[in-house]
Image 1: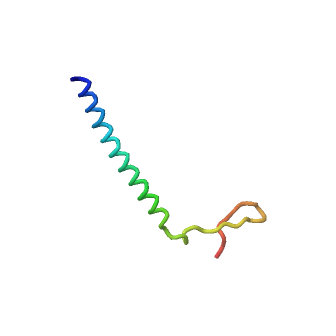
Image 2: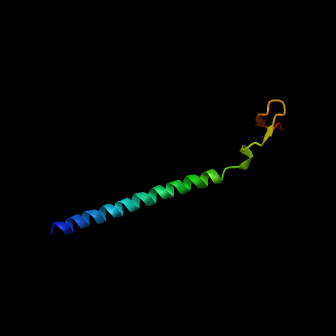
Image 3: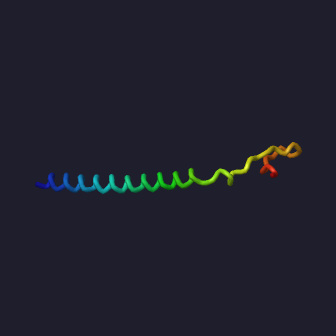
Length: 60
């Protein structure tokens, strides 16, 4: 009888773990989609300063 109880506890733990994994995966995908859907206008192009060699935001 005790091996059956251990097996049931292990199965319940696996189900709970799978549910938590699924919820974490869904949240991560939602975060990634939110980041992907932002406007590309926020990203500014860089140009190299010939004097210093540093990259700076391009002047509009």
